[in-house]
Image (cartoon, rainbow, N blue to C red):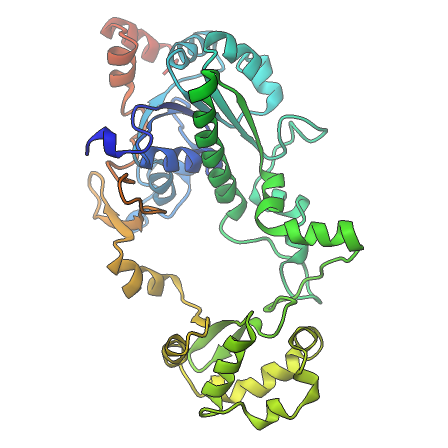
Length: 409
């Protein structure tokens, strides 16, 4: 696995972040070849170490499925940066680093003299990616928040759910993951810029703002330009019919037909080669956008008999034949055993001491010349202390022992 075949080979990254956003950013960069060293608090480690799932339901800080997914391909050390000695060591690590990924509150970073203005004096070429709920400026900048909060305050929760019921939060900490993606992309752009300028820069990433980029941008624009507010629409989206999820014989089908030709081909599927008369003769359905807004319930009920008499597999097969973009709604065990994903080698097995191997998602992209690797599993707490402190920083064994005794590491 020659580093020449790895997009970010030779790039050194220090990760001073925990839970999901920052570690996900670091994991993506590590997969492309960056040398990522993760710093954790001595004794307790990253918050995600205490989150499941745990293989065989045995809780253990080194066996969290979430931690292993987010921190594979990294080296791990412990360091108490709240103490002066710990901060001194961190600055030593940053002197020859290319990137720092951090998630401290701006106020805390400034108090510890770990804000960008101080760090650029230590290493003018350092790129600092600061990932916080609300960014580095503004009245909310030091407010603590998680994905459920940023989706609410960023407007996303207001448009998720049924119109007559309470708003819902997007599942699975989606805001944290999408912010990690944005941060990883921003770091790569900053690395490209540094090739020309030979200078680092500060990247300010706000999770609340990331919702606008990914999901609410068109909704915000619609309000700004026309004053139109988007309401919750449940299992469908306000668009030309269909843009929805509907039940079938053994589950649900996702249905979208932005092109009229796609919708016509599906109608011919259910009409045995012809558009059903109940559709062709009803003037309410001539305008598909109007039908999607005003008559969606009517169309749902008219399609229901055919859908409920066919399985997901049957519908998917027939739609694939006719190039109609309808797909089954799958549960997680069906995703893991998906023929298509496994044929592409998407899932990778990882294992660690004393546990059976388990599957996790693999490369998010494929390159024709570079590679995205799963080199090794996530580090045990303090696993690489000796390697980083003694080999990289050239501390003596006596110095390392003293740092342990005083709980600096």
